Image (cartoon, rainbow, N blue to C red; front, side):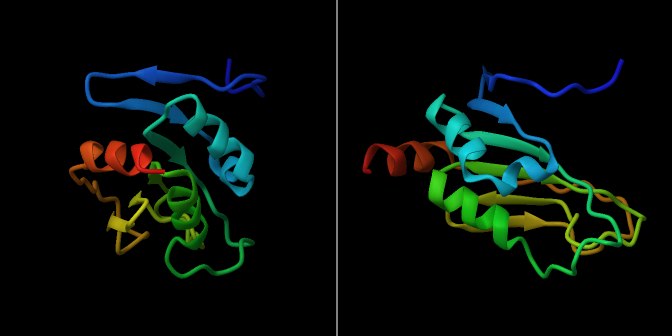
Length: 126
């Protein structure tokens, strides 16, 4: 039971778009996002947990960078009530932050409409 290190990347077709999943620090490595994007992922789910030992982070600079460079949406769900540093939830597009949790000490659901047509047009033009 539990999570185990995987050796493959998978992308799943949904009725809305193709999705992949990375776990927390996987996003540190450009090749992980690149691989899912090359397999057709348009949205990547990214559960994260940043502890008190994590350096303070303002915003979502790394996930914004990955979304832009690989032309994907990143759906980052963070931890709450832990004095986390950088573990905030956010919905990020190649164009920037679409929505984000403002207060990591309170549980909140955030949502946004993902412009998949715009994403596909962007990908087709490059």
